Image (cartoon, rainbow over all chains, first blue to last red; front, side, top):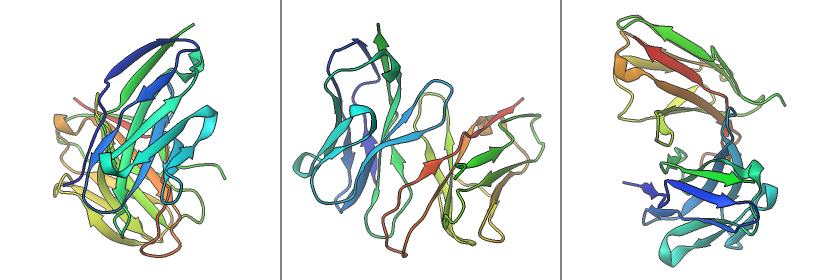
Amino acid sequence: AQSVSQHNHHVILSEAASLELGCNYSYGGTVNLFWYVQYPGQHLQLLLKYFSGDPLVKGIKGFEAEFIKSKFSFNLRKPSVQWSDTAEYFCAVNRRQAGTALIFGKGTTLSVSS
Amino acid sequence: DTGVSQDPRHKITKRGQNVTFRCDPISEHNRLYWYRQTLGQGPEFLTYFQNEAQLEKSRLLSDRFSAERPKGSFSTLEIQRTEQGDSAMYLCASSFAGGPLSADTQYFGPGTRLTVL
């Protein structure tokens, strides 16, 4: 069965610090990969996605993620966080062929202090 | 494009009662999904529709749960004889897929928070 692991449950950073959130998935086939963000009081929003092609994908608000197939990883990065990045971040995966149900990690809460 | 909408946003019910939630997807999206999210967890897949056809159901979807999408537009999720363990946020998402094997991006609604007393 597919699963997604997010290694950090809660990350606390100061503004301007760099961010990297880990995500590993377990599935032997071809997958699509996503990062979603949930700001306080808001619904899940798509940050970025990887379907195929360049393994380094850029999303909104300066976020990027790199797909490393050999490591089954899709880590999220941002060089300099802002207070407004305080949110919960979810990594998700689904099967490339026909399968569309997203499997989510448990999420990482990011708190950025100004 | 007004996004995915869900109604109601909050529902408090007593154990044993039936509840029904509604989801209106982004217009022209042909796929619609239901997920459930509990505190400290990511969303868990329940079921999905391609147009009006329900194509996949999770083992999480017990016999007390039923979902419909009668005209391929809005969808309803009904829970019969609610239990305290049903308390959760119920999320709806929609997407457009050009074909049955096409990758799609799911856009989520605000959710319905269910509390079973």
